Amino acid sequence: MSTMKETIEQIQKELTELKAASQKEVEEARVRFLGKKGSVTALMEQFRSVAPEMKREYGQKLNELKKSVTAKIEELKEQAAAAAVELAPKQDLTMPGDPFELGSRHPVSIVRQEIVDIFRKFGYDVAEGPEVEDDWHVFEALNFPPNHPAREMQDTFFVSTGHLNPLLLRTHTSSVQVRTMETHPLPIRVICPGRVFRNEAISARAHCIFHQVEGLYIDKNVTFADLKQAILLFAREMFGPDTQIRMRPSYFPFTEPSAEVDVSCNICHGKGCNICKGTGWLEIMGCGMVDPNVLEASGIDSKVYSGFAFGMGVERIAMLKWQVNDLRHYFENDMRFLHEFATATEV
Image (cartoon, rainbow, N blue to C red; front, side, top):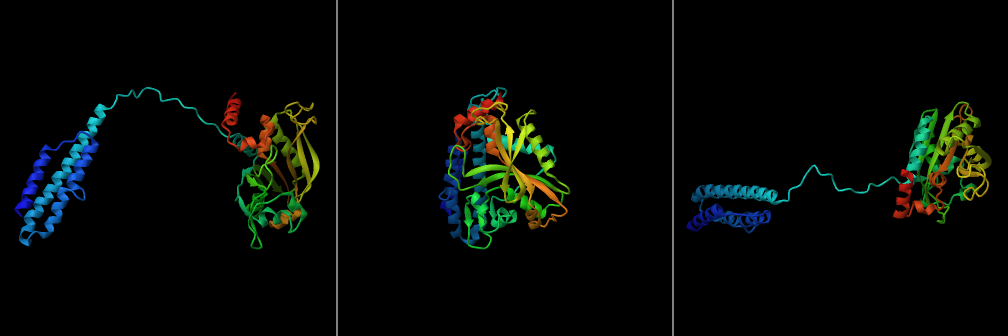
C-alpha cells in the first residue's frame, strides 16, 4: 500500500508543476494521466487488489486525485485557448467579406417558372406526379389501348414489364392530368410541369430527357374558343403583346379535335428568317379538346363536362426565347454556355 500512496503523492506533485502551451500538449497530458494506459487509470486497476479494510481510505484518495487531475486538465485547456486567441492575428470585423461570383438559375428553370407564373395569373393550379409511372396513367387512360399504333409515336423506357400494368418512365406529363381528374373535384384548372423521358437519339433538336408543361381545364360548356383564347393570352405574355398564333389540324389520341399551335416569329416578326425557316411561324405546342373517352376513364361524365388540354416543351420555348439552336446545350453543363447565358439575361 505504501507504493500506491507514494504514487498518488508523486502524481499530485506533478500536477502542481504541470504546464501546457497548446491544446496538443493539454491532450498529451490528459492521455498521460487519464488515458487507457495513464498513471491514474493504472492506480484504479491496482485498487482492485487493496485489502478490504483499506479500500475506504484509498478509495477516497483516488477519487480526490482523479478530481484534481480533471480540474487541472480543464484549467490548462482554458489557458491554452486564451493563449491561442491572444496569438491569433487581429481581424477587423467591419471589413467587407471576400467577393465571390454568385450563381444563376438554369435557363430551363427560368422558362419553366415563367410559364408557371403566367398560368397562375390565369387561375391555374400546379399539379405534379411521379416520374416512374404505370401504363394505365401514361397510355391506357389517355385513349392508348394496348397495341394501339399511336404508342409507337413515343419510344418508351420501360422499368418493369412483368405484369398487366407495366412501370415506365413517363413519356409526357399527361399522366399527371389523369391523376388530377381521378382525385380532384370539378371544375379542374391545372398545369403540370415536369421532366419526361423518351428513347430518342440525342441531337441538336431532340434529347432522351426534356421538360414539359401541360395544361388541363375541365368544366361545363368549355369550348375550343376558350382553348384558343387561353393559348393566345399565354403567347402574348411569353413572347410579346404583338404575337399572333395559328392552329393547324393534328392528331393526338387523348384530344379531339386536336391542333398544333404556331406563334409568329419573334425574331423577324413574320417576315421570314433562318430561325423560322422563312415561314414567319414557330411551332410551340400541341392542344385540343379532351376526348370523351379520357373523361369517362377518369370517372367524369362527358355528357355534362368538357375540357381542353395543351402541352409544350420547356426547352423548345427556351430555344425560341433566346435563339439557342442546339438542345444539347441545356444538358451538358458547359460553364461557357451557362456564363454567357447568365450574362445575357442580366442585361
